[in-house]
Image 1 (tube, rainbow, N blue to C red):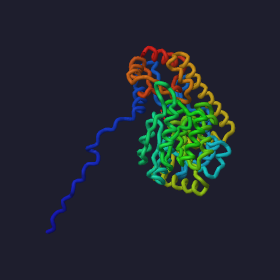
Image 2: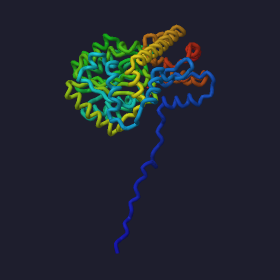
Image 3: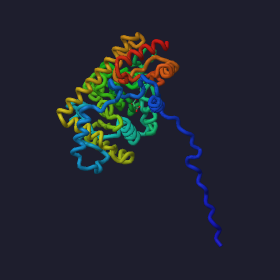
Image 4: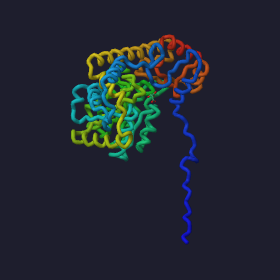
Length: 401
Ligand code: LMR
């Protein structure tokens, strides 16, 4: 008689797992939500907030959603490229009218700026697994995990002197000199997260020339266009670089400048040396998208597309974006006027500044005043709902020592 088979008991997949700590920024969001105190101020996650304290759906986007609701006849599948018209209409905004027509530039929709960056990182890892990515720090805390998840090696360099509140340009140039040909340099196109410290045009020129001379590939994270100095001004440094180099990637987010955060609207653009290579990169990116999310979700990109297709909605979007930017700049000016310790924030741009405060001060501001900011000292300058909140913050900071 045959012996009964002894079934091997497979080791448990999850029993030995330890819980993973929550992302600190997302944890802060949750903590703020459950704080019952009147007058709490959220300067944590990077979202624009209006005078009533909400992150509004922009007028033009709301109008586009109404049109979508009325006219959309199907929810049938698109494809891994997403909404190709959205990607095309965005192109001149990102690259300028002339460069956008260049057949070396291809793009596809991605789930938010994060999805675009992840897709770009995977494309780099697929074609050049040994390429190192150089990353100025401090940076958005998700950059390293995202690049590592795509199995790319990351080498950091210092971007910012927090005590002096200045950008460390020599460190950038030092990194570009050390990087090996074929390495990738992740650059934030504008409104640096978390410091607000952007390169000047002269610095962008030096970066462009060095990238070109050393055969390095820029990978732009472009998430805040229009929230610094204006749509074209915020793209100027990146466009200058693109005039110098053959190859580049751009991870673009429409989430902030169209206020469609939770819809996750972004695009990955690839600039290649010629149209044939661009097309090959496009097909590779499509295959990676297919393996990741198959197809990006449609709604937000369709709404943005409708805004960009209508001259009237486009004008209104641009006007509302101007108002948002003006508010951010006004908050910066007000903060600097109220507290000399905050004078540098007028030199910085976009939603964020990273203040020279200790983690103890950050905790004290939260516990004593209900003011939430990131542990690194980052504040979201677009998070104040009104002037009163700006004043309360400046005073609380002064009293915290
Ligand atoms: C932020 O830095 O606050 C935003 O980019 C939100 C996020 O996903 O981290």
